Length: 226
Image 1 (cartoon, rainbow, N blue to C red):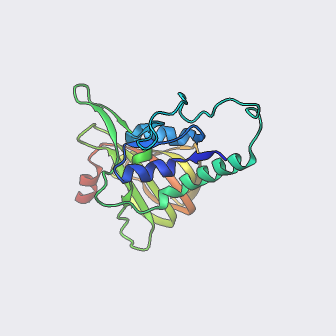
Image 2: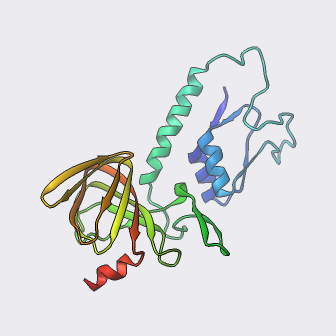
Image 3: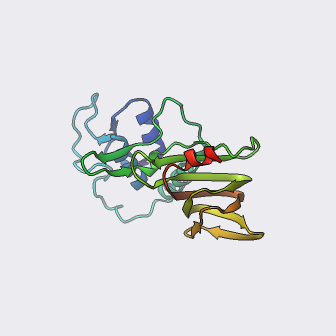
């Protein structure tokens, strides 16, 4: 039976400081695992230190045989299982020693790519300890006149008064937002604009993940002055 390498296994290997992941000719590497390995600097190789070079030249591709076009139900099950497991990784606590996220930058131009899958969220202070809200700012006032980041709300709601303009994109789940006595619902793919000076209640009966952009970028300083 073929062995499946998922993104979870790549993440575990990277956390252990391994930058080389050994596989054999009967290994199938999921697309998510390949993408995450590239982001984390992990290299797949068939050159096992114990066995030397293998004859397979294409990583993750078994030798062709008469069963090449057969559908393996067990393989399909393992792939689906790996995809579901990757979604659950967001709820796993991360070590405080880890970097908040990984990014590629061009110091000369200020260009920046944040690797979204590497972003580790931290608790967002809503003023109410009973809420389950987390965020991570990935573009700050040191980068731009705008700031941007990720925010999650899980079975919670909180009131907030904005002293800045904000645009939000719903990445996962469903958001409820109440403004001027009216409650609206935003779902995956929806875009929101919240004007400066708005008093709103953010919430989710289940779970929601947002990507936000604010202007100006120094909104924490402005909030502290209120």
